[in-house]
Length: 427
Image (tube, rainbow, N blue to C red; front, side):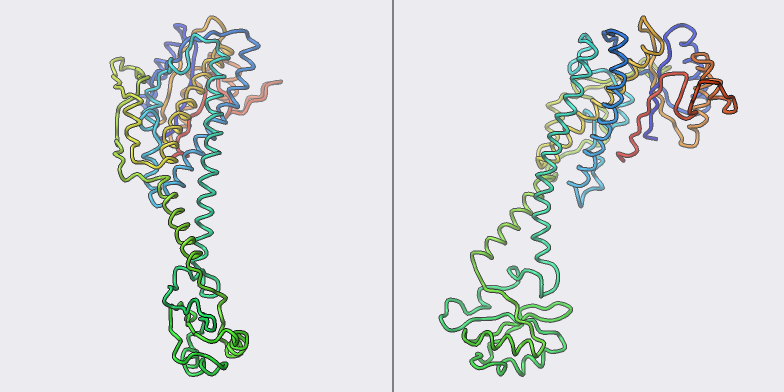
């Protein structure tokens, strides 16, 4: 499952033992895979500032999640025919998202823990805001390009009455630069082909004999040429309409046709270049991490290693990609990393507010192994940590208990700090 529960409990002896019991029960019952989630000690500041940060981080969490989902959708849209491979581009520091979350370590280079907590939050918020601003600008430019191309493509679709003819006709189909003669294009219904061949020369005076030629046809009819003297154009149009032949208003302009064809080719090329990946070597299943390496010690397995990958190496993987896809890959990674840091910040702030000072708590990341077992996993956690809030725990474990003055939603309140990370919407 691509779902994670990030919880915390006080770090005293009693709760460390509770965490060990939780790990034993969830492991034996095959309910979840658990790892310690390391969060640095931040400068706490005042209680009022923590309360304010709690609210701000909640909004920032929602904003960051929305941003990465929009970016993931943009990758799918840009990939178009290759959208089935979009997931290969949704990485964080060069690894799949699940691996990054389960191997998370705070990035001291980007977000120094020695700074005041409010400064750290401000740094993350500004980074995400800048990414969103760039995303809006780049996707707007791409959508404009896409719309212009679609408008041109629409001209080449439809029937002979509405579609552009510039990609059908050629210079040789027309009598050009003549003071007296002109070539018209006439749409003739398929059942009337024979009638056209027999009558077009007599629809008006001064029609050039044997001047008709079928250029193209669709399911409904065909596009014929006919050459005649300019002064009988209106008379010919009237007679043609009476016989269910339609003169298509079209005058061959070589410069305009060339410009339209070049515009179509340019737009097609520009759009393709936004996601071209033929030269890219994607490292599937990579287990490497970037400069700010991530490593977490799984509960019960303190020697689990973590490798490293530099930012330069990661950027080199994008050579040959189009600019929009390359930007989306790099900044999706940055936004996702920032989002998980926001989760860590929320755990820290809420843990201090709930468990008090001095700062002493243990954060744990749980990955439920089965969707069907999440209810049982929740029951185990509420039972193990019920001592953290006996009143709330009693209400949670026994929904029939009514406590005056206390309104609880059993699905939303827990005796421990809890946050949810759901990657399924990025699949």
